[in-house]
Length: 313
Image (cartoon, rainbow, N blue to C red; front, side):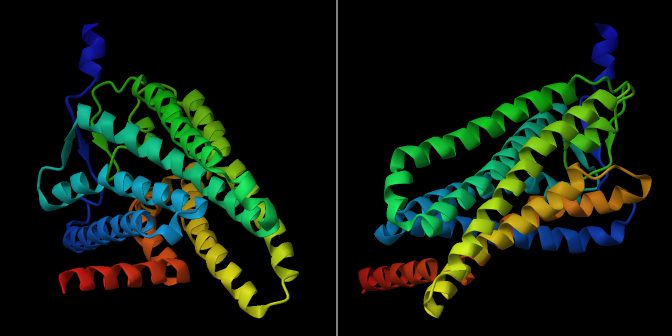
């Protein structure tokens, strides 16, 4: 028992880019601005989707879930990263690392499934428009969203438990900005082959299979769009689906390169940058993508601003 206690450090040292101290101030500024934009952008989408009756549809219900998820997703890592970049002592407690690992993994897994659900919603809306309200009824939407959240948190319980049960033998230097499974597995003084195989298998389930389902959905969507005679109708569909495709490409592209690509010594810094992209940059860009490319959301923002202005008058 004493050996087990000695193998678990009280705190971890998050190395990040500490070997390049000249990068810390620019990264602090970038992360701070990104976090502020993420908070305001996602809160704005949640607010406008709730207040505007025209956005009370399945698509914006799922978008609200995505915005809430991205808010929590970035909050689980960015504040601690900002503290460590500003401080000379770049540490996180063992309990803080466990919480960060669990929440980040749970929300990341949930987003993998939620983006696939959103593509199914677009498939039904475009390929089965006459049956859309019958198929995508409120109960099904709630069930799909709940299944995404429960599956994501269930996966996190398994992955976090497996990772935290690996012996560390007193090692405490995490070569990353935050506590993530691949970085923590590298600390272990035992054979991690089984854990890496489990991580790869679950990554296929949560990353590769949803991507395949999304691609199949969009293959049918493209066929349906090409049959639309109206150029305006085609533009509207491509505008809505284009936003979702950009978000899917940003998130899955970087996550797959992190979790499904074989590790190599030369990919150490690349892995850090990739995880920053899907952990910070993508959640910041999501509200901008959906706002700038979606006429319904832009119209809802304008109506909300007018209402606020009239109330003040």
